[in-house]
Image 1: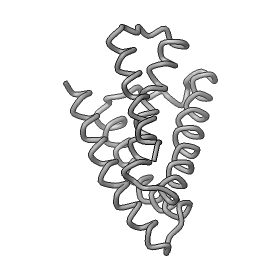
Image 2: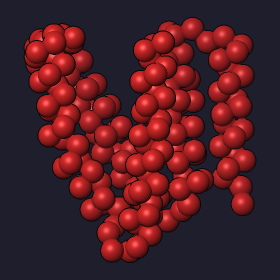
Image 3: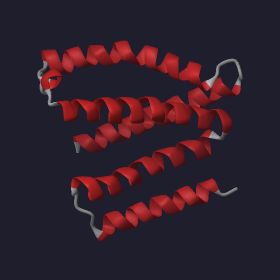
Image 4: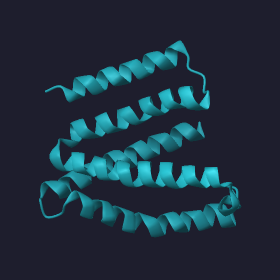
Length: 149
């Protein structure tokens, strides 16, 4: 239940936040790279504060992450930092700059879970049921329908 509540909260934050971002980009006073830089600059101190509260004070996560094996740290840096963080944001904000938020957001955020389900199944050995496969197919069908004019 906690996972679903946090997922719903994340979706609401991103949904509302990206509408604001699109409104800002629409003014042509701010470009997508500037928007990412401001987003990251504002988010970073808050994230470090949450890190200190959750990890250091509440001890709700492993505190030895800096001593994780090199493979784990590379996956963190390359996957989470470079691909999901920088690459995903640059591509997403560029898409927002050129397209409608009502099309860009659902496409980007529908492909992400579909990709994660498929990669989780292929590379991580996560189970895939007929229900999960059907859901991915429906997601991808929705992406195609949104992509068409």
